[in-house]
Image (cartoon, rainbow, N blue to C red; front, side, top):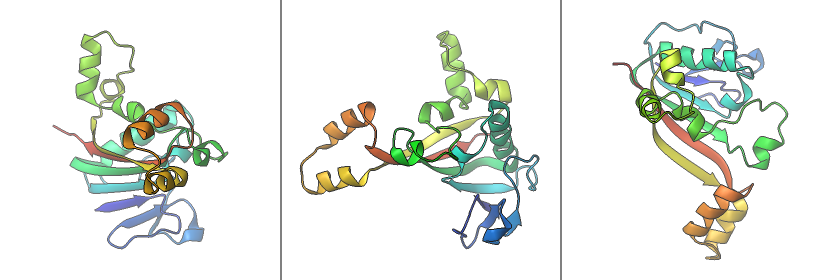
Length: 186
């Protein structure tokens, strides 16, 4: 089974489209902050969650329950495709319904292998995979640039190295981030 969580009006064929609002006529009406989700353990092969994760789980307790539900319903090697606005872009900063930035390091806190490495180094990173008994690995990250940067690339006014430097320093360079997060159950 493939889930399109928080589908809104973007319902997809071959997915179970889930949203909390009846207005969008999803296949299943469910609020992602209500637990448990209406899916069996180990029943999901893929989750698409596009421009949703930054809207849910404002409290750490709720966010952690969401992550644990993803883990519960997914099979080993399931893929969670996350698309979120970049936390240093106006599209994230200007929306009052955005309750949490989603970052690469934040998602890496749920990687058991990294947790164990950090533990050996006495790093301060929260070992959320170990604490919550979950394990996810980031297998792909794609940064989608702001339109102004795309235009500058097309005009050959900026190179890749400059973009990388600007992205680490400034707002409105990267517009959104796409992350493929793999579920590890051994």
